[in-house]
Amino acid sequence: MLKIILSGIRRRWAFFKTYYIHCRANRVEYLRFLGTRIGKRCSIYTDPHNFGTEPWLIEIGDDVTLGQGVLLITHDGASRLFRDRLPGMNPFGNRFGTIVIRDNCFVGNNAILLPDIEIGPDSVIGAGSVVTKTVPPRTIVAGNPARPIKTLDEYIESYPQRMIPLGATNREALRQELTKKLWGQER
Image (cartoon, rainbow, N blue to C red; front, top):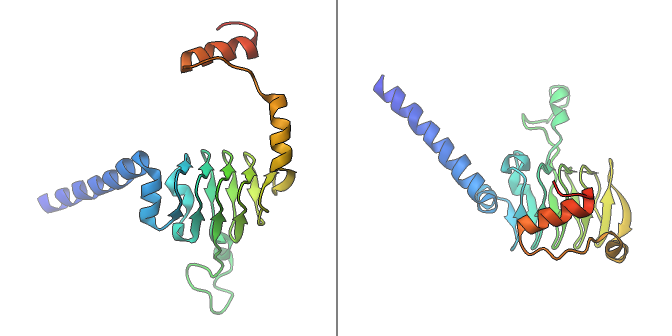
């Protein structure tokens, strides 16, 4: 009986150690441990479980940011519906694909990246977009399915029109300044 209890405690500790310590503390290192190729200076805010069941089919270049809730799917899960009808299908299905994100890309919150895509360097994926096809370099895409909306040069050119001039040097000053400028009052 004691062996069973100790075994359960060891399993729970192993899960805690693996998930909470490694995943939460350093997502990049944990994803590398799982087989994902990740470049330098990357910021990954999405949960490692969002890299699916084949994280080794994902490659991320240097200076890439993945927002919260980004989902990377490397296989077609719908094959479960008909796998017993097609000869030669294995229990995992037979349709897999890679996801490659080149250098200096930004993927917005809750975007979904499907199998067999490449995101070209210097590209931006809008929040909530569903990427079903390869994204050319220096392109901004958004929507479901994701479609090009402008080039990086057009985005950079239009950016100053939306900039808010700020003098804040710390978080509290930033909060006060933005609250006053955007809400018209202090809160």
